[in-house]
View 1 (cartoon, helix red, strand yellow):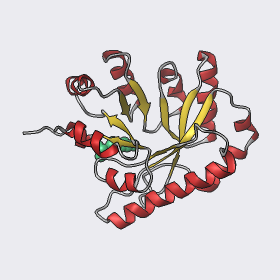
View 2 (cartoon, rainbow, N blue to C red):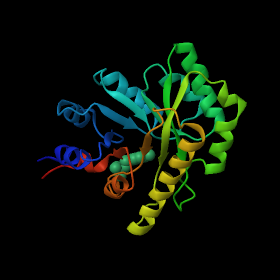
View 3 (cartoon, rainbow, N blue to C red):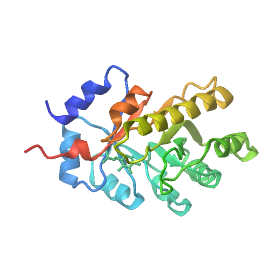
View 4 (cartoon, protein in one colour):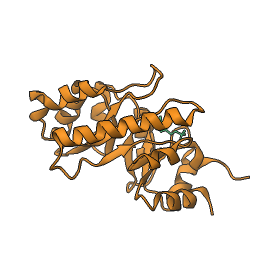
Length: 219
Ligand SMILES: *Cc1c(COP(=O)(O)O)cnc(C)c1O
C-alpha cells in the first residue's frame, strides 16, 4: 500500500477528511497525487496557490491554510473552496465583500492560537467570541464559518500536543453551543499534520492537513 492508501484507511473510521498540503512540491508530484484520486489540496501562500490553480486540473478543491493579507483576498475568492486561516474581523469582512462581488459564499474556519510558540498565529477564544457577537459579523452574507483550525507546538512531547488539540476541540464545542447550535455546517475541526495527525484524529479532528508525509519518496 502506498502512503495515500494508508492514510485513507487510517482516516476512514472517523470520516476525517484528508487535505493534501502541496507546498514546496513539484507540479509533477501533485499531478501524480491527483491521478491517484486525491482532489482536496491546500497551499499556505497565495502566490503558490494561484500558480497551482492555473496549472493543475480544475476539479481540484483548493484550500488556503496560511496567512492571508486583506489585499490578496481578491485573487483567491473566485475559486477558493475553504479558507482555514481567518484570524481577524477585518479579514473576514474583506472576504465577505469580495465574495459578494463574485456572487459566492466562502467557507471559512477561524484559526486559533493553541501552540506554545508565539510565531503561530490565530485568535484566542475571547477574540472569537467578540468577532461572532459583533454587528459587523451579523451583517455578513457571503461567508460561512464552518469550524476551527489550529496547529500544535512542534515538539516531541506528545502529551503537550494532545493537550493543545483538546484545547481546540473545547473551543469548537463552546462556540458551537454559543453561536452555531442549529447550524449543521459548523462541524469542522482542522487539526493534525504529518507528525501529529494520529493524535489529532483521536482528539476529534475532522480534517487533517498532511504535506511532507504524503509526498515522501518511497525508495
Ligand atoms: C505545511 C503545513 C501543513 C502540513 O505540514 P506537514 O508537516 O508537511 O504535514 C499543515 N498545516 C499548515 C498550516 C502548514 O503550513
